[in-house]
Length: 237
Image 1 (cartoon, one colour):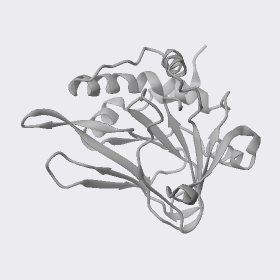
Image 2: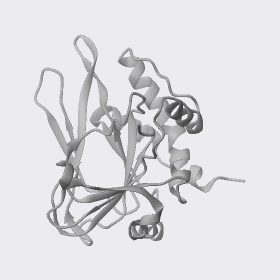
Image 3: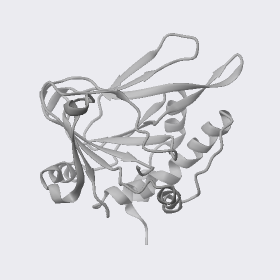
Image 4: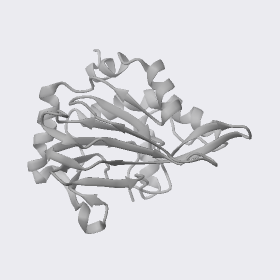
């Protein structure tokens, strides 16, 4: 039987995705969710029993807004999307870390990789639902939850930019070796994903490959409500 999530992910232009993420540290993944699926996930925010914890971002000086970590087992389609995306992202991750002279510990399946995380004490779920209101924002950061890290993650838009909210651009800021930092801002349409580096990316220099650290965040919401789903491919301590 055909896996509809793997089929949907497989229809993406992965050559273009790979080219963009190699160059910019992030790339769009259009059409991961239908409008109805995106709304159904966003509406789960008001069902606290689905989550293991809630974080007030201003309390920890992460910015302003709120997010919730899903408890496991994840609801459909979160688990299915993670399973479908992992094997597509895995070759990029292995190539990047090989260029940087780092070990590539990730096995062929997400289940095996998460088992390694759990054996290392990283047992807490990391799929996250974020909600921003007017004036909210997310400080530049990296989602490193332990020693075991998968170098790519995905954010999926659940609301319509320019209609449901204004502002709220997804931000990437790259610290380039021996150069000024470079920033990019992306509006993520409802149902579309955006894959980006969790930590850094390899950059070709005159001395070979160097690691360019990248942090991500969200610009200030000017009006409306912005909700997103975050898929991290390692679990947390």
